[in-house]
Length: 128
Image 1 (tube, rainbow, N blue to C red):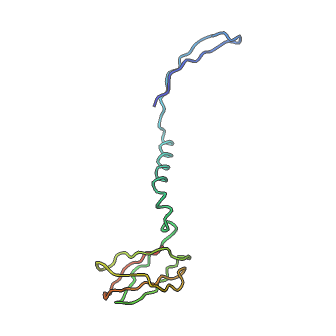
Image 2 (cartoon, rainbow, N blue to C red; image 1 turned 90 degrees about the horizontal axis):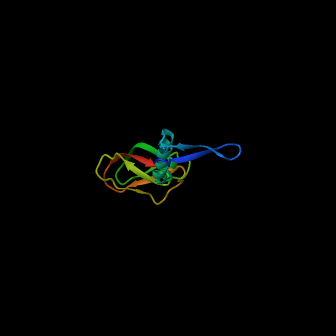
Image 3 (cartoon, helix red, strand yellow; image 1 turned 45 degrees about the horizontal axis):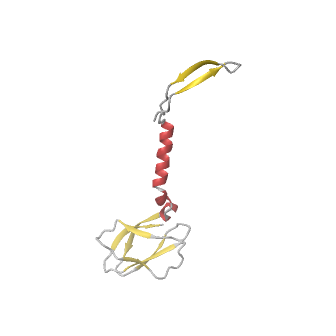
C-alpha cells in the first residue's frame, strides 16, 4: 500500500513562502518484525481453544497397562490434582471395552478402570 504524494511548503521568518517541495509517495513496507508479529497473533488466535483445553494443563501417559478379562485396575496417575478425563492408546486389539468404574476412591491420585470384555489386552492410558 502506498501513501499519497504531498507538497511541503517552506516559509521564511515573516511567513512568506520561500519554497515548495514535492514529497513523493512512500511505499509502506511489510517488515520482518511486522510479519513476525502478525504470524504470532494468528497462531495465538488459531490455538486459543486448544490452549484452554484440560490437556493443556498437563497430562500423563501410563504405559503398558495390562487388563485381564472382566477385571478392574486401579492406576496411580500422579497428576497432583483430580483427573478430568482419560483415553487409551496403542491397544493390541481392535476395540477394547473399557469404562470408568462407578466407585473412584481418590480422583486426585487414582483412576479406576474396568475391562468389561472377555479379552486380555495391554494398552497405554493417557490421563489429563
